[in-house]
Structure formats: structure tokens, C-alpha cells
Image (cartoon, rainbow, N blue to C red; front, side, top):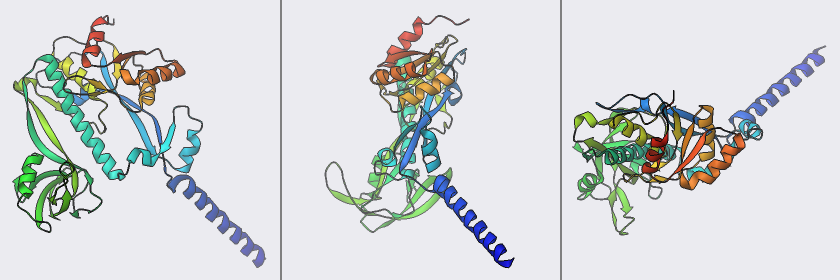
Length: 346
């Protein structure tokens, strides 16, 4: 009897171990792959406000996103049965960056996209504005040599040794007379909290001149505020929780709609994608096939797509059988001209 019980207990233990291994392999074991799928189509109006702007909007402008998930074995298996899933190598997405660096870079791209959209809309509406340096954003760390101190991707550099550093020029001046090995006190914003950290200067090479100098060993980007001369035309953004530059066109259209009288949407549901420059040039983006699906799911009637992305967008639209009309654009003028042709939806 005891032998039978021991044998049964052994088999139960093996079963538990096997189940645990299967669960680990299927769910927790990392793979070198990432899965792209349709994300969301979100209304832009709640994200951006023009103080004193025209808020009348019967329809909606929508920005579109791509869902990206670092894949486990289970997700890789289910993706085989999903025609909208795209599996790529993680390294093709990160391109040598860490996941933290990639995420920080996308946050900076979004911020830069918003600034460009503000400029493009102001230029289109004839609103006078100026550019005011705001702060410096860290989106990467050097590999060789590595920074010496607690500074991380996503940090905002507020100052050095108590002196504010709104842009790269001021930061360079702050470090000009320092030596490699000197320690500076950095005032940083991290996760919404202001902190101070000591960072030792390392030797860095100027990518343009090839000369070496003392530096922090970080890759940075300037964040600027676009300030309207008329306070009633000032634009503010909420935190979108989305990264990347591809919402530029749709931000521009929403801002311009608030800056000018009347409703450009005319009651329609209008989605789209595309980067934007201050001159109103619309640039190509990645993942357009997933954004087409996301917009269709939210019952968009029209989809503005960068001209260079049109063929792949059209092929996906035909595959899913959407009734949504694709409108290729190269500039914000192209989009505005098309909106003028729309009739008011009853």
C-alpha cells in the first residue's frame, strides 16, 4: 500500500513540474520576436485644446496606432491564426537600443510631433508665434564609455549645479570649463518627480568634428514650447500615453479646426496618419496596414494616408473589405482641400 501511495505521489509531482515547465515556456520564457497588430483609433479633440478656439465639432478627427507586444510562445502560436498579426524580430525594432531607450525615444518623437503640428497649424492659420526652449530630454545612453552616475533614458535635464539648462547651448556652456572626471550635480525630472543626482563627466567624441570633450555620455533632444503671440490662440496637449511621430497630420487638422471658424469634419468620422513638418509636409509612417484596420473598426468614413504609404494601405483596405475611403495626401493643404469637398452630414 505504501509503495502505491509513493508511486502516486511521485507521478503527481512529475505532473506538477511538467505543467509548470509548459506554463513557463508558453507564457514567461522570452523570445526574440515582437508581434504587431491593429491598435486604436482615438479621437484627437480630447488631447488638444486651443485656448479661446472654436470647439464646435460634430464629427471627429482620429489618430491611429499600432499595438506592439514582445511575444511569448503562446502569442506566437495564436498569431498564426490572425491575419492582422505581423511577427518581426525584436532587434529590427530596437536597432541596438535597449527597451527603455526605445520607449524614451518614442516619447520624444511624440513631443516633437506635437510641436511640429502646432507650427504647421499656426503657419496655415496665419497665427504669429515664437519658439521658446523648454528643457532637454534624455533618450539614450552611450555604450563606450558608459555614463558614470544615475541618469537614465526618459529623464528630463532641468539644470546643472543649480543653473537651468533649457537647451543644448546652455548645457554645453555649463560643461565647457569642466574636465573629464569632474562631478556635476544634475537636476532631473524622472517620473514626474524632481531629483538631484551626481554624475561624473566622461570623455565623449563630437559626432560632427571628431573632437573629444568632457560630457555626460547621453543622447539628448531639445524640447521646445511653441508660444502664440495671442494668448487666446495658445495650444495645450494632454498626456496621450502614445509614442512616435505619426499623429502629426491629425494633430494639425484638429488644431487648425479649433483655430478657425466652422467645422472641418462636417459631421464625418475622419481618421488618418502621417508625420508633419512645420511647412505642412506629410511624411510616410510604419504600420499603416494595422492602422487601416484600427480605423475601420471605429467606423471611420475617410482615412488620410501619406502618399508613399498609399499602395500598401489600399491593398489592406481591399483585403478587409472596408467601406472607408482612402485619401492619399502629401501636404496638409491636400487634406484641407479634400475636407472642403465634403458635404455636411445630416
